[in-house]
Image (cartoon, rainbow, N blue to C red; front, side, top):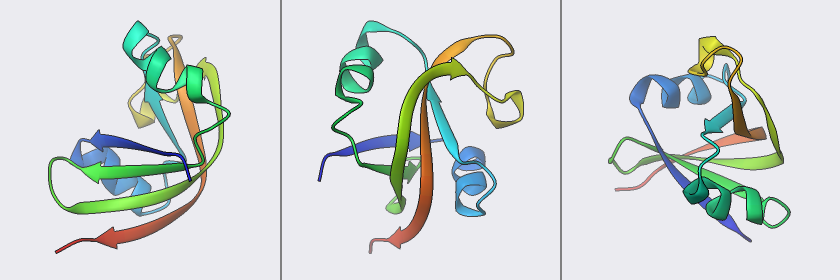
Length: 95
């Protein structure tokens, strides 16, 4: 299993948790290119962290593409991102 961990602001994490937001965005920078784009065929699990807490969600990755994002989910209109699309979200709380 190849897993990618991302820390999210609480409002975006909550949208994932409620099943409203099915994708996460990262800017197309050299840092994210190496961590996401260059590994797009390998990453099968996305673990989302609610800020720097122990509250996490584990998501199955459907695909990673370059595309514009939804402004309601935090993307700037017309800007192209690395978009991580997920198909299933499982809540995990670690104590």
